[in-house]
Length: 148
Image (cartoon, rainbow, N blue to C red; front, side):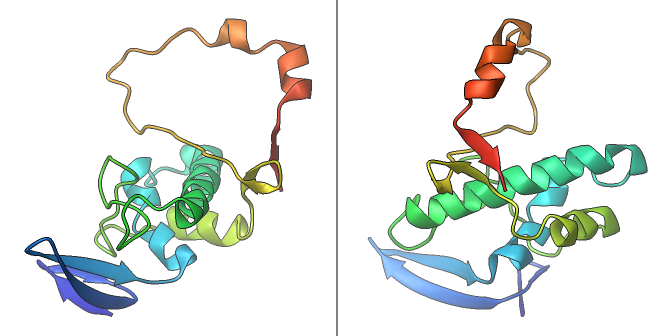
């Protein structure tokens, strides 16, 4: 564990030098990483959000596993901001986020036996396309994505 800019992080810190810049990389297990992602991607302070937090945890884990196979950068798997997933170490861990990480352990969305490219966003700015036309029963049956 270490502290960087006043924020505690689990895992180890690796410093790389690339293109005249120093790059700090947090090396840690995926479930520990999720403790610093889930509370920053969805509100985790209210009990009524439990199922949404579970779903968000599965999406975040899936996205992380996808990025391990398809890294965002040659030095690390994911950016710690909105380019991938917001990650802020142990700055804002919550009991509900930790519960969701534990209860969904091993659950990921698959696309042909590989982690799906499960993109999501935490904020839409109040504008989304109507999804109802996309929720046809035949689409749901034929979906290539499975939750395991």
